[in-house]
Image (tube, rainbow over all chains, first blue to last red; front, side, top):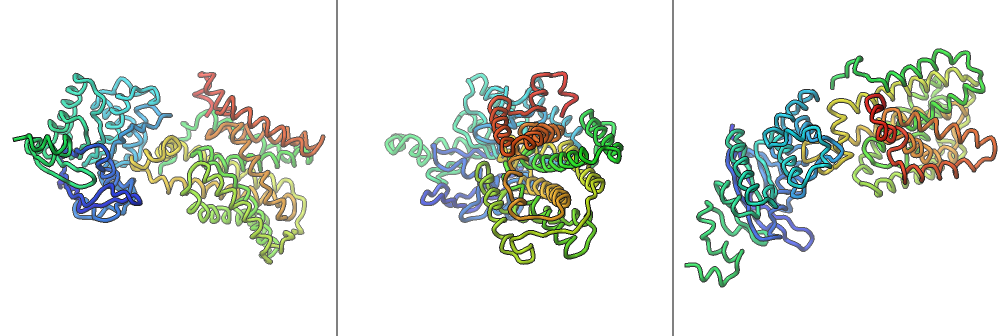
Length: 248
Length: 314
C-alpha cells in the first residue's frame, strides 16, 4: 500500500506569533515534494508539526486517512514518518553505527535484536557513504558528516515518508552535485516519499516532483518546478513587488 | 525482551557476583560488630544502585530518593506493627510502596528536565516529611516503634538478596535494546524521541524500578533500627550520600555504585567514631573535587585513562 501524508488547514500559533496559518499539502510515498519560502516563513515549524515535535493549534494531519496530529513524536516514527534535524543532533557518546542502530531498533523496523540492528546500521551507513566512519564516535564528525549521519538515521528508522530539513545546506558546488545524485539514487531505490525543506534552489528544483511555497505561514503557490519559478507571487515573495512587475 | 546469555555476562558482573557470594558464604562466621557494618554498607550500596538507575543512567538528578527509603521504612512499620507481618514481608511491602510512589511522583516530575527535575524531587522530599508528620496512622509525628529482635543474619541476607537482584537488573537493562534507548535519552532526549524512542515510558520505568529498590533498602534500614522516625527518615543527608556514592563511583556504570558506597560509607563510618559532623565536610569536598576534575568518577576515569580496562570494567 502506498502511504499518503495529508496536511489540511494546519495552523500553529506561538502566543501572538502566527507561524503557520492554514497550510494544506500532501505527500505520497515515492514522491518528493519541495517546501520553500523565505526565512521565518514557517517551513521548519510545519515539519515539526508533522513529526509530532509540536502540536498544531488548529487543523488536521493524517497518514492514510488516520489523524496523527495529537500523537507523540515516537509514535509517529513508529508509523513510518521520520524527520532530520536542521542542526544535526547525533547521539554524541555513540559511534555512527550505534547512532543508526538505535533508529533501526526503535523506528518503524523495531528490530529487537541489537546484533542484527548493528549489522543493518552498517548497511545503511554504506548507503550514505559513511561506511568508513562506522566505528567513529559521532562527536568527532564534521558538520557535513553529521548531516549524512542524520540522514542515515532517518533511513534507519525505515520511514516511508521522510521530512528533511535543509540537508543540502552548506555544501560546495561539487559536493552539492554529488549529494543531489546520491539522494536521487537512494530515493529511486528505496522508494520513500519526502517533504524537503530547502534553501538551496538548485537542489530543491532538481529533486522535487512538486514544490510548495509558503510565505508568512501561508501557502502562496504549488506546482512543478517550472511553474513555481515563473509564478509572480513567488517572485514577489523572494525578490519584492518591483521584480514581480518587471517579469513578463 | 530476551535475557542476555550467561557467558556474555562479562568480568564486572562475575566479579560483583563472586564478591557477593563470598560475603553470603562467610556471613555466619563474621563477628557481629563487623557484620552490622557490612549490613549498613550493603544497604548504602543498594541505595546507590537505586539512584544510579535514574540519575546515573539518564542524567536526571534526583534529590528526593530519601522519600522512597523513608516510605519503605513506614511500610515496614505498618506491615510489622499493625498488620503483624514478618519483617521480610514488611520489607517487600516497602519495596512495593516505593514502586507505587515512584510511579505517582515520576509521572509528574519526569516532565521536568535538568535543574527543574532536581528541584521538583527536592520539593517532594521536603513536603513528604510534613505530610507524614500530620498523619495519625503513621505514628502521629512520633514515628513507629517496633518490638522486633536483633537479627543481624536476617538483615544481612534480606539486603543481600535485594542488592543481588538490583545488580542483575542494572546489568540486564543496560545491555541490549533498551540499553541503547537509555543511552540515547541520556545523550539527547529530543533526538531520541525522533528516532522512535518512547522517552517518557523508559524514564518512568527506570524511576519506578529505582523506587522499588530504594523502598526495599529503606525497609531493611529501619528494620535494623527497630522502628522508623520521621525527622531521621526524611533526612536529606541520605539523598546526598546516595548522590555522592554515584558521582564518586561513576555515574551509569555497573561497578561504580558499589565502589562509591565503599568509598563514602567506610570513611564516614570511621570519622563518625572520631567526631560526628566532620564526615560531611570530607564527603562534600571530595564530591566537589571529583565533579571538577574527574567527572566520570572512579570507574569512568579508570576506563578513560587505562584503555586495557575498558573490556573488563563497566
